[in-house]
Amino acid sequence: MLTLALIGLIGGLVTGISPCILPVLPVVFFSGAQGARRARPAGKSTVATGGVAVAPRPVSRARPYLVIAGLVVSFTLVTLFGSLLLSVLGLPQDVLRWAGLVVLALIGVGLIVPRFEHLLEKPFSLIPQRSPDARRGGFALGLALGAVYVPCAGPVLAAITVAGSTGRIGVDTAVLTVTFAVGAATPLLVFALAGRRVAERVRAFRKRQRGIRVAAGAVMLALAVGLVFNLPQLLQRAIPDYTSGLQDRIGDSEQVREALDLGGLVNDQNKDLSKCSAAATELERCGAAPDIKGIQQWFNTPGNRPVDLRQLRGKVVLVDFWAYSCINCQRSLPHVTAWDAAYRDAGLRVIGVHAPEYAFEKEPRNVASAARRLGIHYPVALDNSLATWTNYRNRYWPAHYLIDADGTVRHIKFGEGDYDVTEKLIRRLLAGADPGVRLPAPTDTTDDTPDIADITRETYLGSTKRVNFAGDEPYRAGDRSFAFPREQAANTFALAGGWTLTSQHITPASASAQVRLDYRAKEVRMVLAGHGTVRYTAGDTTRTVDVSGRPGSYRLLSTRDVERGTVTVTVSRGVQAYAFTFG
Image (cartoon, rainbow, N blue to C red; front, side, top):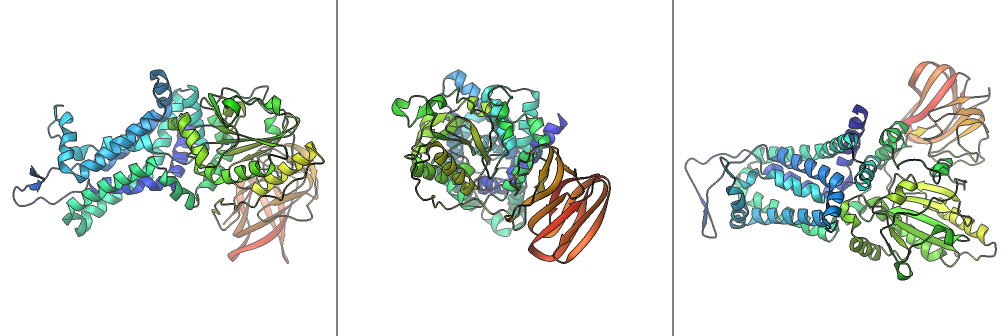
């Protein structure tokens, strides 16, 4: 349970600093500013507004905490129970989102128009309390924000979403959800407290309280209107997702995957999918494609009839898991729609499986509208119960599963990027299905996958974690022989000699076992364990490092500035190599 809580908290913190949080920051900042301590005038005073005398009212300094507490409670309840409750009541799945937008707009209008604020207060004045005050209604604002808040997709959120949609909700899921919400809200609380601090310390804020209230109301109205027209997504798409690398590291952790049970249970249909290594550069064989099942509704098919994969034998099929509010999916979809347009006549069939992250994404009209807006003309399946998602043991938005003409999964790609590789494999399968096919020129769609860093990402060597292996051999657990490729891409590694691969590390099985790394960094380190030596060569420099004991970080080389380079490492028997890290 403690492990789940820690995973939820870390996943939430990463989400809380992601670009997806940007649209709500102004609202949170001004809500904190409203909780600032104000100087009291010497005598009683009133402010006349539209004929109504409004006396200055006390302000709760707890307001920032109330806003964030409301957001945590609302997000937790909506994510876990919103879908099930609305289904029982027979209400549209986006009703909670619209209710949140209405409340947000009403609060905004109340801040701008005091008379309207008094009307909103009247129902609450019937409740016995010492001093009814709408300014203390930060909790209500937090509840509204929690209902409309759409964090970026990640492995932790995926596990929570699957639990909520399938009804598999227990104490562990509740702990994971609450800690995720707390983690995601913590950066917002910091921002709210910063707003309060600024309002207390900056004289312009103290003197213009009326203007601050109007500005806060305008910001809330702007957010509500923007959410109605999906305007924040344009901002998020324009800003690189600088947290995607952190999300990948969380999702790539075997311990995290086991703790979250991501993607559901293994069954006879999906048991061979683990034979595919995510983002492989060559075709693999990963068993028969699992069924597309449990679909609520289909779009873009004749009569909106279901599509059966068995009826598509002889065609190459690309199954694309997506969600329309997912920013990562929005950046990926131009490539998918381009492939559909370019290769449909050559035998490619694209199926979009819409797997919702949130209850409002389950509304068919919302999905249909988004599909039209995003230029999707291929069949779309509404996987509202995440039955197909679970049957594919999926854990990412977006995710691509490439299936050959015989119905075998040949390639899996999680997340954004590597579109040129996917298209190359599509073309190869099309040519294999019909040797006489005339393929058009490759598509020329701009890759908007954000460049999140100027250095090579952490490079894991275990068989279940590697993502940038440059060799031609299968990279799976067991004893294997490798040879360096003639050419090696940037930010990749390759092996030579005999190696024993495990899920966590690799260890030499021969005296000539080597690793060649192409990197960009200022510092290169290896995580090593066991007993022996590591000899590395970079340019004209050759050095030896003694290894002894439990896994630890060993520095190989360091330069003054970030540089591109290649280092060849010879590892002695008895040493386990876990990863390369960079600085």
